[in-house]
Image (tube, rainbow, N blue to C red):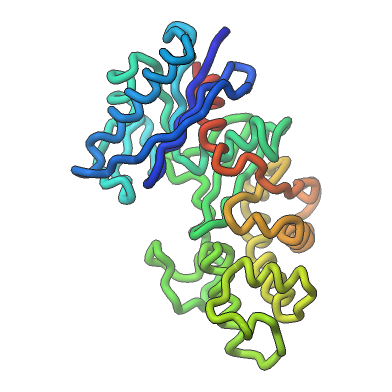
Length: 313
């Protein structure tokens, strides 16, 4: 039997899993991300952990197709990264170093792209070959899969849909330094920001006025309860997001959009409202694209890592 290892490198923990080549999870575990001394121990820690897990599960390295690894940065064609701010990394040869430590083929990719691949393989997009994953968390991330392959682009920035410019009249600055980015409206912080703006410019009664610090969850809970202002904010957020995704659709024509991240816990009110506005914005066969919720949660990255290793081996 052949196996693959999936690794999801995060700023706090490194999630890891061993899978059979047909997608069955054998075991999963996590270790702490040791960021001391600019993250110099991270890769050796991961390699030692993988080596130990393979030995513990009596899996020979000749039966391992490789290690697929999600990294929070833009992966260059040679498998390196130029910078990973939240790891303390500058230029790091991820592929080369991990292969030296483990003696196995290593396939690094951006963590959002890896999560998209995992959701398409065994999650919300299972059975599809063309998908776009949208992660709505503190920011807005994206991963684009075409014919089962990650679209990373020339510099590893393929799928960075959170920084598509959606409004030219925006005055507040996004974390990227630009203004009017999708992330400023559709992320968890963006939804809360939209709510504060709406509350300031209208006198409509709302349960949201009774909340000291409005969150995205508060907004969606209010909308689900029929609160008029909550509904208005959700409609506006989903209208902007649907417009952005209609642009993406015109470029890559996906079968499905997979919506993940913390905001996706709002459930079908989110996917249904996006779908409504999306259908109004696209033409022809693009209207067939579906909207589904991600199902793998925090395990999407390790599934995607394993799938990448299997596909590339």
